[in-house]
Image (cartoon, rainbow, N blue to C red; front, side, top):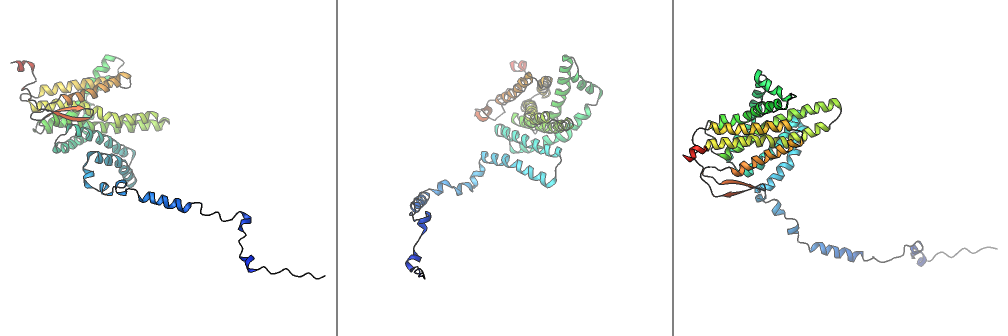
Length: 351
């Protein structure tokens, strides 16, 4: 029996959407268009002039603010140093110099904002720091080989506590503070370039930073050699942290305080050397005693005392014809200028 072929599908059936059989039925736009439009309207209502202050970002007055320059300088310098290292393939010691310069510059600008010396003093201070690095320290190292001085330095390793104190105070402390004071005495005081306490303190501070930078590179490089030899980096890392972050302000505080005495001597009439001797002697003792106890808890106390003394001298300093510098929470305020007595000698003042 012959079967009739099925009827051809009608055009209506061909056009029919069978997607519903697979869950593909039209469910509408789910409100997406409405949500998108509402979201777009929300963004259109924003105050873009306030949220994206293009004029403020590119305004030259922004770069005149100290805080902005500070952040840009110390935020970008490590990137600049990293690039310099890539360009010139710096040795480890050369890289250490860059890091030392970074932290010394940090402290220098901090105290520059407090002390506020004249711009010319800032330029001279850089020269003093370089003098200490390239001339003062080599001369000091040469002096350490002389018989008497060599014995003084050797006594720092003595088993006797008294001999160690003697060696650190009259060897290390005295000679290093003299080394840092030399550029102030030769180029500042003798030539009449130091006009008062501000000049003396900042120039001494910068000379101390130069000394700390050179010493820090030497000690950190040596500690790194030891670390590579014995396979441990803990001691090297701690030495590195101390030498680049703490040592500059320690040496700067001792030298800056000596500079305070040199500034007083320059500002007051009469003989200047007794005042300078007192300042160097005080800091040589404080420096030497710190070295005796370095590494102990009492060494931390002496370091804190060093910082406190330096800040106290800043607050105590008075310059002839200039406001008195008062340090409060890292900021500077001023009082009415006070006259400087003609002499620091009690007997002469009474007379």
